[in-house]
Image (tube, rainbow, N blue to C red; front, side, top):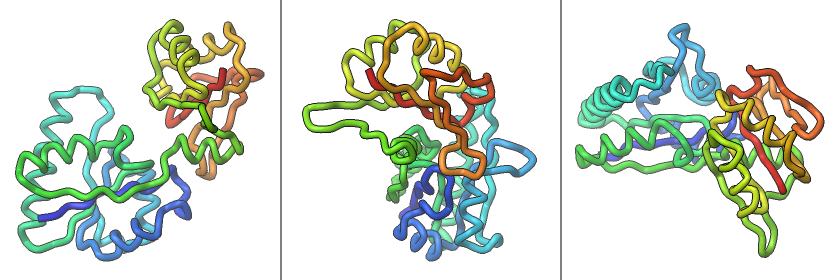
Length: 227
């Protein structure tokens, strides 16, 4: 058995790779995660450009942070995927961004591995790569370095990152946006940007050296800091 995990890129349907499209087209079932019971899903909106609706299997993951509940859902979905694959169907699971970077497929992979099911990840363009390109912003050059980290809780942790790396990419900014904006205000950085829903129609880009975005700007956002 082989199950695919496909990275769909940051949101713009034109940024889905050719390999990802070919894998979607040959799939019998494309599993699309959604965190909203109303059916809204960025991944779903992208997938609909490449596969018919009847191929799509929606799976609800609540954004509650309840690890036990999520673990139960991952286990149940892995079991469902196993059944579908046993029927000879080609199964793909999609995620926005790049599959290995903070995606739900990483947890599913562990569940499938425990069932001795092989998985194959199809690379996607990450949000931070798209963000850097959006502003023509080099992340690192010769002798430089950069890191990708979940937004820390404290100024001290952020300061340590900016001291160690040429560029610092921060993911999962949402609930800690205030820590980020306060850090930028108090420290002398050469560049600091917040990208919300990058490459999508409602994309917003904030220069944190001159702007203080509202709290809602932290959702689906990536920040890039340069010391």
